[in-house]
Length: 106
Length: 120
Image 1 (cartoon, helix red, strand yellow):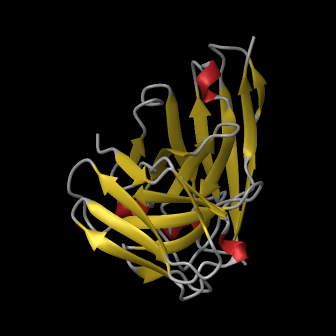
Image 2 (cartoon, rainbow over the protein chains, first blue to last red):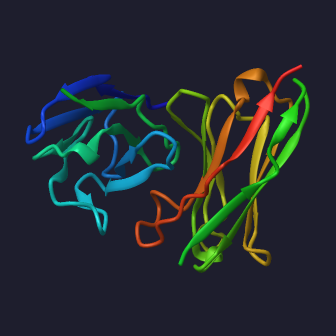
């Protein structure tokens, strides 16, 4: 089975910083890669689907990129409301999530 | 507006069974691929499995930790998704969600979850 990993597991950044979270698959996957944001006590929210497509209503400071085994979520201008845990998910046949990256403010 | 509501969770002893339901409204359920996702207390998201729409074959995929014990099914006449869970283990304790995501970004629906606790 394909495994998904994420790095870092957590990070602290300042408002306005550019933040990048990486997601790696244990073998090459198709472009069915999504990113979710989850805030404490809330259900996950879809940010990005098919690697780089921004879900409607999601601020344009979020972007996705990558191919093959290596993918990234970038927040270009970190805002206080972006404090959350972020998960990647491969979705095609088996659809595992990555372990998550917790983003906090410095 | 799309809406999903899970039910059927509760406290069950190890080795026991439960059937979770997910009632859908506000979208064409029969066209939707549906997923079950769980989250143990304080832990990350874990994909449990998914089922395709009948027009796409209606087949299922289940995660390795639940394969052979859990079965996903659907009743399109009732707009309802099911998760039959047998031989439950303490490590199955989690909040169980149903969702249309990430299959259908234009049908952005995620239930509030139903809690399953496996304990003697």
